[in-house]
Image 1 (spheres, helix red, strand yellow):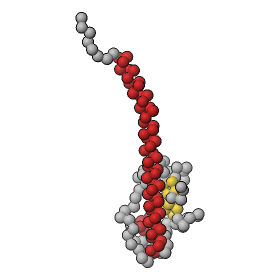
Image 2: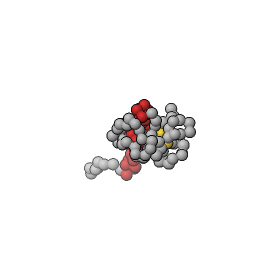
Image 3: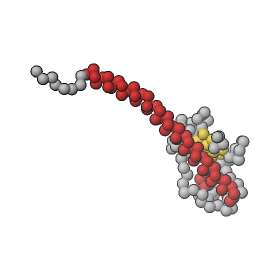
Image 4: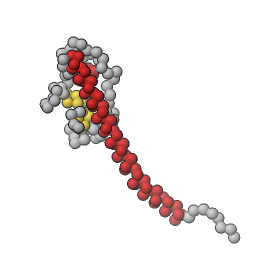
Length: 135
């Protein structure tokens, strides 16, 4: 009699267990890198927004107020104080890596303005918030 070639159920289970162990080791490392990349991307966006706000101040002698917000970088504010030498600084407002709007407050307590992201959890005032003033 000829014996048919194929895999036994035991062999298939061993392969599945080995693949599961490899996935359990690799997937967290990959997803950890994605989270790190999102945080780094958001920090870069914050620095670029800070530079744009500095240009706004150089042109107009002041930062946009909290009420005017970051929108003042895209369209001329109609809320006083109106900037004297306004120009369009951005085509559109960026969002952080998680799709949330950046938080802008001016004036702030320790700095001329506060610019931050809510971070990965999307909640303001938690430990994972990312500020432009942090290293």
